[in-house]
Amino acid sequence: MTEDEKLIQEVQDQCEYFAKGIINSLCKRAIRKINSWNIHIGTDDYPSSFNFFNILSIEYQSKCYDEISPCLEDAIEGVLDNEYEKLLPQERFFVDYSQCYYDNEFDSESIKRKIYDRFYEILNEHWESKKIANFEEKRNW
Image (cartoon, rainbow, N blue to C red):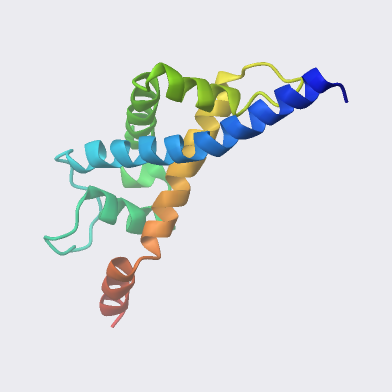
């Protein structure tokens, strides 16, 4: 491997490192927007303290998006895409180049997939949170 190739590899590795934090922040901004939606999903009686994301994290464990609400997946992905478009140029650089490995070119679909995957990881992690676990435990009694 030449010195130039090593430098490119190092830059790309650093981009991936920074992109993880940027994507995490992007998803959290999207979640705040999603929580502001005045949409009712689910048939269970959820506590009034539960926001949209709390309910979505429960509903998503046993249902597909079409069962929860038609067009919901597109709406969520639209919010995530919008947050990606609003990134600062330097943030966008890190995210975009985090998926350009060595000989690969820029691929917007792999970037979107990385963002969506992180959103679903956060959704599943939230479902495992104490707040949701306590509700699930009470509901199963």
